[in-house]
Length: 328
Length: 104
Image (cartoon, rainbow over all chains, first blue to last red; front, side):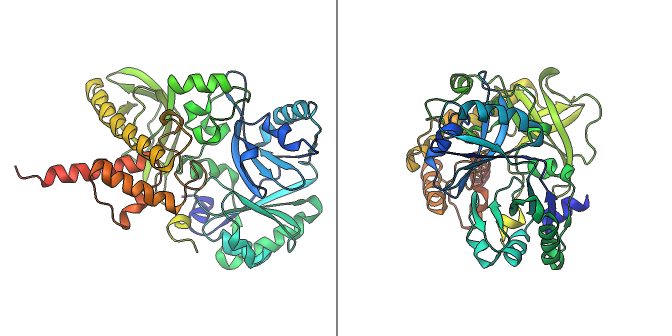
């Protein structure tokens, strides 16, 4: 078990997400400009709430998974580092059709995240007792830390993100590490996050979603507002509901050792899918995988053959985290 | 050769699909969600992100599952209510228990 995994599941780890894209859209039509780009409906949420949604292309394929934060002054849009250029282009193109302006704040801001069952206590120690009132998908302008403090996350544990101007970097980092010392807070490795996400059936776009995959195939239906009348990829997504082709499915092996070699998923020696990610889950003590399988067979409790091993399709999330079971 | 035969897999799919469909229809109907069954992914979280349900909705789902599937749900069982798939797992396990309790 890696140190980062151990910290995130049992205490807390500090991550620097500063390389992620951070855009701020302002102006009279900021909401409309962002809404034209995303598959969820920004009109449907109140201020100080966040959306986790997707930006699609015309074929319904996921171009970017984004967090959208609605404030009184404008809209924040956060994305993975490798989607920044693409998302920036989409936002700017949309803004030009409305009274809105897009600022790419990635280079002048930073984002530090504390993730783990103790993250709420650490956030409270640095940002005040009111932090306890921030719901999941909520955020606030925190005066105590001079940050935008967001409660987001994919790991099933508390995750508090602090977005601030770059000049706050060393102070904020020191403040968090000092407050987190009694909870064992240490700097974590971002490379361990995809496994922590997968255990909760949250998907990392880079690790778990092949190019060309739709939210329907990835099982991310909830990132789409199906009642929204107009968004890029609308018709394709609705068509895929009926016939997605392949669907993402969590598989679990009885073995500790991952299957070696061919990652093809088979039934009766017929190829019916492919694993895109295989990893050992320390909490389960078993190997798990994410596979894309023919939709007709992509159902929980079917047992597939992967490299000669039984691979049972299982329900997600794979277990109840400490944060959910007994929030501290 | 590992895994099920195609026949076994298809039989499993038929059973699972039927329970899942009934459960989704109950959840949508009871909670008046503006969704169709194929607009809910089976692994979507029921609470928080995902369907964004709350504790009141959870009680509605409990009532729906008890009446539709004839199973009893205790407070401890509520941990199963995390996604459509985990609820279907729970229903299948309860139905299996009932089956095993029947006198031969």
